Structures are given as structure tokens and as C-alpha cells.
Length: 251
Image (tube, rainbow, N blue to C red; front, side, top):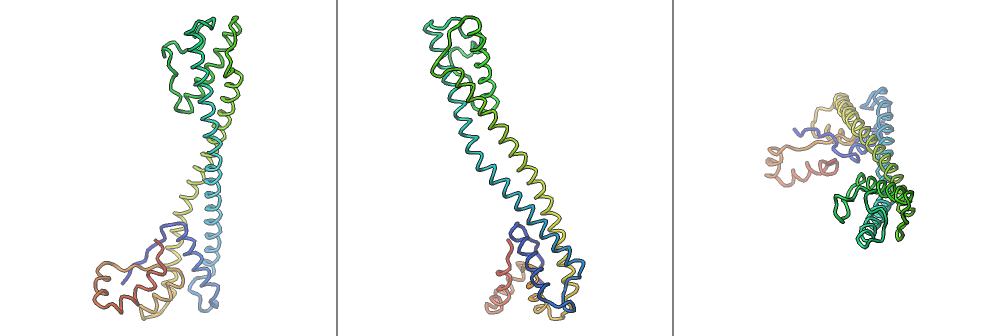
């Protein structure tokens, strides 16, 4: 006897719920294999699952779309911070900058640009050079241009805002994922309970006919290897028996 297999994907869960709902609404109350209570629960479970899935997919889409803006802001801030530090080192090397590099915390890097690979590094060094340049100018130093510290500050602030916004989107997506994971579990539990009730309420002795009727309610049956092996000995029977199994494959 084939065994039941619960849905393993979101589309499969929706198909299972829709199949049961469609079949139940087509039957009269006397012939329905689902009780009124379970039928109402089915509608609620389906609505909750679809709403949660819609929100989850929307959060993923928004995060993905806005990630392009975030990456652009990141690359722009990195470039401006890096270029400013390079110009700073060059002007210091030529002796054109009064006050040297002591205001920026860059002495240990010996003329090399510090790592700017992460959010934290870009924001840290962006703020350091902005503060350092402001202090140096306040102490009588001449401003560096191309890029100016004003442009560096703008790019760093834009990146900071983009990073905060993107982080909030990640949190939204994470919360949606947790809700989606929970609703997948409860939906599968409901489908299992619903299928058991449908099986119990479908009182037909012929197992093949019964399985065909149950499959119309969305139940999925999978043949075991040993059963498939026996069926392979008779291709005609195999084709007939596997037809519905393949049609309702929820994998």
C-alpha cells in the first residue's frame, strides 16, 4: 500500500489546501469527507498561510531591490574615503600639508590605505578622516580638496543611512522568515490531521478506488520501492497505478 507524503514546498501546501477546499465545496453536506468544523479551519489555515507567504515574498523582494541602492552607497563611500586618504598621504609626503597625519589615526599604516572591506571599516575610517580633517583645519591647517572633506562626509552619511535602512529590511525579512517557518509547521500539521479525517470518512472497501477519491481531495500517495519493483513486472499496471501519483506529486 502506498504511503502518504506531506507537502514539502509552499506551492505544494497551497495546492493541497486548494484541492481539499475545491473538492469539499463541490460535494453536498451528506457526501463531504470533511466535517463543518474542519472545513472552516481549512479556510482559516489557507488564508493565514497565503497571507504570511505573500508578506514574506514581499519583504524579500523589497530587500533585494533596495540592496542595489545600499551597494551603490557602500561603493561610493568606500571610494571617497579611500581617495581622501590617498591624497592625504601624498600631500603629507610632499610636505604640502601642515599638521601631518597625526589627527587621523593613520600613522601605523605607513602610507597605505587601511582595510575598507566591511560596513564597520568604511564607517569607522570615514568618521575618523572627517573628524581628523576638521581638527587639523581648526588648528590652522589648509583644507584638502579633490575630494573635499565635505563630499567625503556626505558620502559617509548617505552610506550610514543606507546601511541602517538595509539593516531594518533584513530584520523585517528575518521576522517574516520566522513567521513563515512557524506557519509551514502548523499548516503541515493541519494537512496531516485533515487528510486523516478524510481517509476515515471515506468508507470505500476497494483500496484503489478509495485512493483515487482521496487524491481528488489532494492527498498524495507514494509507492515504496518494493511496490514499484513489483509493478515494473507489469508495465500496463505500472502506468495506470503511477498516473495519479505523478499528477499529484508535490515534491
